[in-house]
Image 1 (tube, rainbow, N blue to C red):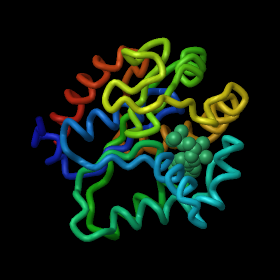
Image 2: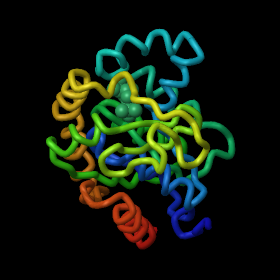
Image 3: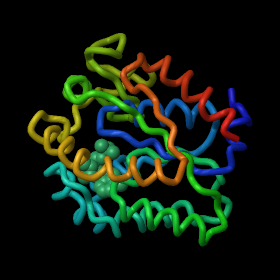
Length: 226
Ligand code: AMP
């Protein structure tokens, strides 16, 4: 059921953390539960790649190598969406911003559009646990539902509980690419945590708690922050 308290936050909520920290799973939950948009830049880029758009073609080599897609590409994609007339004040960003420049430019964009400063939730997890999460991650090829064969398996192996879609492993979830993606995170995303900490807009969360517990904590965190 939609809870107006989160929708009335009136600002963007950024989920920050390394790949595998549970951002995607939680962003989907929170967005569904509170009926606000969920913007996953990773999903958007994957969709472009699938459709074979020029943006997808230019992004693909970066994604396959586990590197970040250039800032301009991602910024334009997000800004175009959020600048649409009537786009809600409250939405959840998952996987964006990923660099200092993206964060700064997005802050500027929000200011220019008369929108409030974002609220940032940092998912804290340790690296060993992350590797397990990422190598165990399986995604529904139909609805995008996320599972983990160790911690959150589907009822029937290889099959989505929600729509019966085939579960697939993302090509960038193999150990080599994961190690690179984590390196990318450590090199870049930590700067973001510092940036938002300075702005005093950072909430921290233990990303290792069971998913349902994390969801409840998020709800508690977001509701009183109105
Ligand atoms: P994700 O699904 O968030 O793990 O993202 C998968 C891949 O998409 C990343 O490894 C990057 O190649 C690309 N990507 C997603 N979001 C961004 C972003 N904000 N900036 C740059 N690249 C991104």
